Image 1 (cartoon, one colour):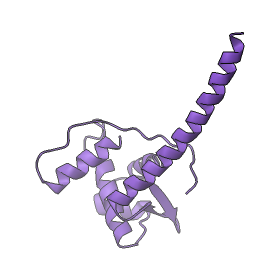
Image 2 (cartoon, helix red, strand yellow; image 1 turned 60 degrees about the horizontal axis):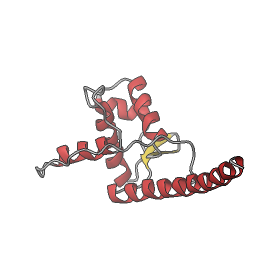
Image 3 (tube, helix red, strand yellow; image 1 turned 180 degrees about the horizontal axis):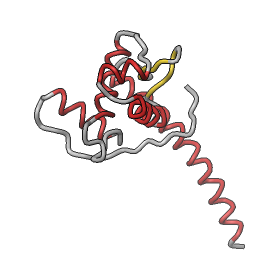
Image 4 (spheres, helix red, strand yellow; image 1 turned 180 degrees about the vertical axis):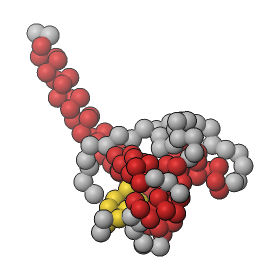
Length: 138
């Protein structure tokens, strides 16, 4: 997948000590900057989980289907879908939505690959700027 403009935020937070899947999934999403304190009804989290289940079944979901399943307005669903797409986690297929991959581990690998590619470009730009700055001192 080609890298587009994306906003990925990493939040370093202590991992829960319990083995509760729900708590671990929320920690996972918070660590990727997906679920913030403003999302009081956890709608983004619920949409993320619904998309993960749909992706595992290879069954893309429309925004209307997500809204119906989770009792959320289409506007709320689209807001969070756009956030997840902005993070590079969600793709569209046949006017419906899926996560990029069907496992969380593979999803992290995709994010890591995108991050490394971007860091390589930033490092190249930094070297170019450093050379120009060295020449400017003369």
